[in-house]
Image (cartoon, rainbow, N blue to C red):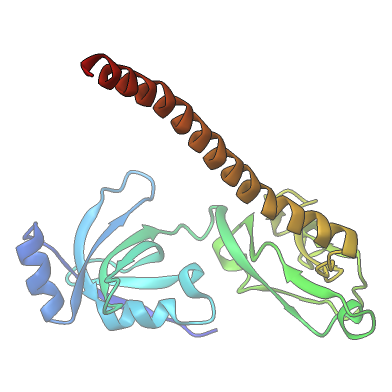
Length: 242
């Protein structure tokens, strides 16, 4: 397994201005914390070295050495990180101290390989439902990934967390064992409307127009009825004038 070392320096300046100037030098603000009776330390670390760790096979589960100038080297993992949404460059990194003799909780990715028989022979669809699981183990026993062959999966077959291959004596599964990780399902087909349904849909679409026309006709009759008394009154007035 490849080993990594991240070079760091104690950070003195705080705020956006000093942080921006730090990034221009190829370093990135960071904080190192965790461990029994150890204080948090504000650092600047080499951005390229951290990015290389995050792109490695073990990713954020990688255990590496943090070497601070004029200080003792410490084992750590990347706990959290922030990146610029436009450029993708690192903005800040949280580093967590690791004790090699203390069990810890981590999330491990799940990868599958092979073409399921339910897809190849039965025309089903393979769906990945959960892409990582949580486990507890010593730092040295953290798996890079869980890989499982799904070639024998048929339609209706489910891959659950309990099906993952790992040493139960070293690793404890924290994710619910019955959690579905992947399955093969039947491809749903859109049902074509029957002739009766098509006629019903056309009738339903035409009804609002009929009602609308009827309403207009009723309104027209109402207006005509309202005009009749007015005309009668006007004729009566003309008769009196004569």
